[in-house]
Image: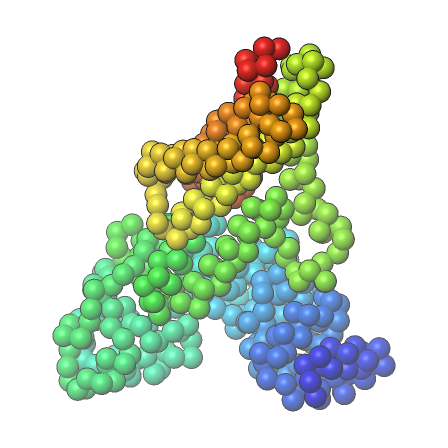
Length: 446
């Protein structure tokens, strides 16, 4: 049976009401393929398929689904059917799902937790959204400096089924102060009576209140299997595993890419997303850009008399505004990426502005010379000079603003992709036209 045949066979069995055949078809598939199928099916059909899975398979598959797909299954099946499966999730995954659900459903699911499960979930829920504390696992295996390797290995073996990872073990004091980390490999390779203090190494950790995307990137950059997360007093509160860091980083990249294109990321695969949802993800941005475009109209009204005297000026408006907008967007994209990679910080704003201004000046010089050579034979040297001077002015302005805006957004604790797109579009259009008509008035004597 091929992957492309499975969704069709599942739909056929659903249409025929053959739930026994459906269960048999899914039973023969590994969890990773079941996850792919559930992601590719519409919510109602995915719920039917999920319902006939054996419990252990359902738990394994549910844990690997995207949070949006998990929320769709809860909405279709009801919180009662997934309560047991919800209890099997790691606390950080539980909280991620709760954030995705309506408040009433989230409360019902939270009520289904008891004892240590509820306590662990509440620890994660206590941190603000967007912080790494919200995505860490509070269930971990720990070690003390004076303990032997054999003691810690025994503890890790006993807690392996309830801890998200045992490969990196934080070393803590009796007051839970983070002292270092020791790997399971080092413990297994060491003599059983060797103390942890002799084996541990310094820990690369993070504060629970730090931005989750920055911590995830740091975790991936250093290749840390599990990063210790501490409170403000350096007491260990949880771990961020490298697989969670990879998912966080991937989700952030998808979100930034969508917002850089003036839309919101889709919660579900494109073909399973309704036209209404796609429209909703784009309409807000289009309205913002439409409102900002009124500033461009006002600029054109200011220079209406200038346009009447030299109609040919109107021919180059799309060219100049397009080049200005693209120059600003290129700078914003480059700087946003550099921010995400940790190459620059907010304090580097002056250096970024200087670099982008010089790059914009060089771009403007090349494009201005090209504009002068192309426009002069057809519209005269004076109009060619207007275009050249405008490009020489607009490009460094647009590049500087485009490079600085992501840093300003970061300083204001706003997503750079959200803040930059509408502002750069408005600024480059309006400023480009002001420069263009001002230069035209001076050069052409209008």
